[in-house]
Structures are given as C-alpha cells and as structure tokens.
Amino acid sequence: MKHRHSTAPAKFGTVLGHGPGGVPVYSSDYDSADDDEFPDRQSYRSVMNGVYLGHKWQCVELARRWMYLTKGYVFDDIAMAYDIFRLRHVRVIADGSLLPLQSIRNGARRPPEPGCLLIWNEGGEFEVTGHVAVVTEVGSDWVRCIEQNVEDSVWHEAETWSRQLSMQRTKNGGYWIDCTFADASILGWVIQSDDPTEAEKALVDDPALFQIKRRFLPKSTKVDRQWLDPSDPMQANYIKLMHGQNLSADPTDMTAYYCISETAMREVRRATNELHRMFLHATNFALANDQVLERFNLPTALWPRIRQSWSNRRNEMITGRFDFSVRPDGIKAYEYNADSASCYMEAGFLHGRWAEAFGCKDGRDPAARLLEYLIEAWRDRSIDGLLHIMLDHDLEESYHAQFMHKAIEAAGIRCKIVHGVEDLQWGKDGQVLDSDGERILWVWKTWAWETALDEIRHDLEDDEENLRLHRTIDRATQPPRLVDVLLREEVMVFEPLWTLVTSNKAILPVVKQMFPSSRFLLNTAFELTDDLRARGYAAKPIVGRCGSNIALVNRSENIMVATDGQFDDRDTIYQELFRLPQVDGRNAQIQSYSVDGSFAGAGIRVDPSLIITTNSDLLPLRVLPDHEFLAD
Picture (cartoon, rainbow, N blue to C red):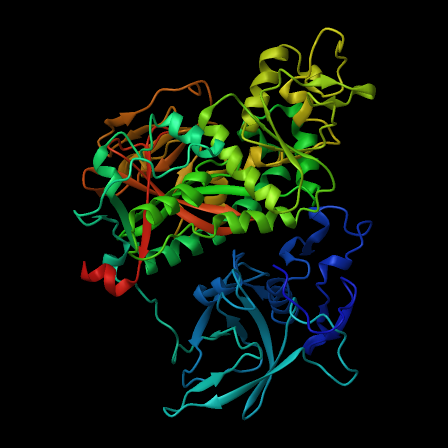
C-alpha cells in the first residue's frame, strides 16, 4: 500500500533517519525504486538471519524489524497493519517462547509508552491496510513515533522521530491521540507486558447481524418485462442465455432480493482484503519450495515460467473472487478464484439496473462501484498498446468480456475482443497476430490457465521436455493455439500465469498452515485426518471450476451430496465442513469481488443444492443499516 507524500520524496531505500537503538527508517517511494537493484518480488522481501520481517519498506516491516533488533522478538505475520491490534503475543527469536501483548484502545486510562506500537484503523489516509508506528517518546500532550510509508523526506539532523502527534486527556482521565491526517483514526497502542490493566477484551458483534434475509418488493410493483436493453450486445447475450429478461427460472425472483447487514458486509470486506494478502504470502512460499509446489500438480517444465511470472512486478491481478459462507457463528472462505473470476457483470451492472428499473431503494448496492474500481485498475497498468480480450464461444463469457471491455475502454486503452483462436495467424519471426494482422502483446482472458495446460497435456503428455514453449512448430500447417499466445514471453497476460498457484485448491492447506489463527480460514489438509472426519468435510479436487467433483461428507461419514465433472482425476484436498446458511429453502453463498487486490464489491449466489455450481442463481443483494436489519 502506497500513501501520499506532502514533500518531494527521497529515493526508494534512502535512510531517512535513525530511531532509538540506531534502527534505520527507509524511504518507501516505490516510483523511484531501481529496477536493477530490485528486479523482482523476492528482492523486496526484508529478511534478517532467516526471519521474514515484511515488505520493503512498509510500515509493518519497520515495526517488526525494530522489535527484532531492539527486543529480540517479533509478532507473527499478519495481512494488515490493523491486525496487530488483535494479536495477543510476540515470539522470542532465541527460543520460540511467547510473551504477552496488551492492546489498549485509544482514549483508555493507560497511557502509551516508549516502545509500544501505535495502530491505525483502516480508512482515509490508511485505506484498506491501516498503519503501524513505533512510539519513541511520550510527552504530556504529544507522542513521537518512527514509521515508514507515510512521509519519505530525510529528517532534519537533530531529529530522531518521523512524526509528532498531539495527545489530550479526556474527561474520564483517558489518553486520546489525534492523527495529523484528518481522515485517519488511531485504534490504540499495543504494549508487550504481563500487566492487563485497561487491555482490550475481545469484542463480539451481535450474531443476528450475520444472518442473510430475503425481502420482496411491494406487491404493487409492476414487473417490466423489457427492463434490459437488447440493443446493447452485453445485455443481449445475457437475455439470450437466460431465455428472456429474467434473473432466474423462478418468476418470484423478479421481485425478491437478499439482504445482509452493514456489519456483515464490513467483515466480508475485511476478510477479502486480509485473505488476498495471505494467499499471496502462500503463493510466494509455494513457489520458493519445490516440495510444496509438487502438491499443485503443475507441469514441472512450466515451473520456471510460473516463477518468472511471479517475479515480474508488471504482471498483476485485475480480478479475483472469494466464496464465503456467512453465518452467525462465523465467516469462512471456501476458496479464492484468482484466475479468470466470473460474475462481475451481474454484480457490477445487472443487479444495479434491476434495482433502478423496479424501484428497490432498500439499503445500498454492495457492487455499485465495481466498474469504477475496474477502470481505475486498468489505468494503473500502463498498457502501451492494443489489449486483446480472449474468450471462448460462450454466452456467459461473452457478456462478462463485454463488461470488462467497457472498463478497459473507459480507462483509455484500445482493446479488441477475440472469440476463440480460429482466426489467429502467424506473423514474421513467429509473432501471433489477430485476424486484422495486429500483433498480440497484451491479453485479458476469460479462459482459465488450466484450460491452456490441458491443451499442453493433451498434445504432449508423453514428452515433458517438449512442454517447453520453444519447441519447433510447423507454422505452415499448424495455426496458433491458445498456449502459443498465453505462454509467449513477450505477451503480458491478465490474469498472470502465477495465479495457477493462487487459485489451485492445494493453496488452501498452505494458507491455513501459515495463518493458523485466521478466523476466516477453514481447517484444510492434503490428507484426511481424524479431526476432519469427526467434524465432517468437503473433498475437493485441487483443480476444478464451477463446483465440479466436490463431495460433502458428514461426521457419520455419509456423503451428503456430490457433483460430477471433468476433474475427477485430480488430487484432492479435504476441507472442514462449514455449510452454507439456508434462506427460504435455498443455500446462500456470498461472493466477494476483488479488484487490484482489494475488496471492490459483493454479490450472492443461491441454490437448493448444498454445493454452488455454475448453474446456481445470481440474485440482487442489498446491504442494510444494522438497526434496520435487526428490526426486520
């Protein structure tokens, strides 16, 4: 996360000054980073004596490095800076023992002290991530701290701190610290101490706020059978797929919508942002360890290409989708669809159009800004040529691609939709050209990477050495294939090749092992354990789409439901059984959409079956204020 800077920043990696103990504070102006010095992702990892401290030079990295150098302990890896406020211990490097952490909320009667960590909530200047700084001095009406990734100016010679914040006493004797940014708020401070005085206790939201409800429009609502515009190719493809201007095959769905509370949506947003970063940490771990990567059943000849894709900082995700079960007893993620996630058009356009057409004004649309976020993400990609949208001959893929086409063009990028590969042609020097003779260099695709790998496996399954891209191709007789486009070194693809790892369900046991205390993760393993048998479990192929080849088994080891599909020959992972909530006889799954790695919207998918598949209905979702939700 990059924060704005009020003065001209020093070059990335410049020492801005030194805090207590001689700990250096570095500039995090990523725009000035030297590509020769920092050529890939790994070069941005801050490591001391084998201990991972964080991403250079983020705020969390400084907090952990300061603890390591001055105290000899560190806190566990976390997804967001604000998560530090939830931690309850640090780990001593020398012997692995644990020491208690006390979290003191801003305004409490226990004052901050030098050496404590000051924690900011998400929002405003510190949107998405929150922030952390190390308190170095405490006065009667101020505190001073050292921090990274806020101001990147070199300190004055006599200074030993990054920023000074005002502190005031409240009427009840508490200590309140104000941030210098008006739109940022401080959660409190974290102190390593055995003394729990004024320490924060775990706060529990009302479980009733995590139900999902179904509401109906007033009976007087007139259903307009022409609420979509068939002259728009995107809407026309949807109408054709749905056999009319329908939301589902059930006519009652035209006047119904689903509701969740603001508190539940806040937690879905938080889960999305935290889990995205956890999955990236797990992706890095898997790619750095051959024994782990073997679990993903990816062709070994492609490992170098996947690792190269991961190291290439220009090639980042645009879209992803988490599938959640939201229940009064918790929010749990089933998986991360990080490669070619779908359902963006329905959430980002269709359901908003439905609400407008039928006058649904309850609450708000949680995906109202989805298109806006996509436009911003494409603008940040610095694409300097034609971008090709590649997809199969499929109606759902077509309207999904046309929705993305709107975002790409709005971002000022010239783009062209290519259906299938039949019209591709070879150019000179082995270039791949579209039907108009334009070279393909930038691609966004609806095809999953696994589709391309299946093509490789099918053509060359008996000769792994020939899996390499540079094998000889008779271009006079063999037209370009999908892999000849997507695996070319000069072609930049969204979603990138490394999402083969992130979206593979083999990542689920890895993430759980790395973040065992996450409240959003289900217990998942490569082998069926006694604990999973006792709880009930879901058996899932490590590669699969649309709910295919999944079996749900209860604690009596009876199969509750199972789906067929094309992935029955893949390795399996076993995930703790955590059923979807039922709403009016349908199982409801909340889908959370990420754009550029951050939460961008949400939707809902429902089905009478316990397993959500590609045929499950996507219906309108509204977010209600807590008081209104509870009053219903």
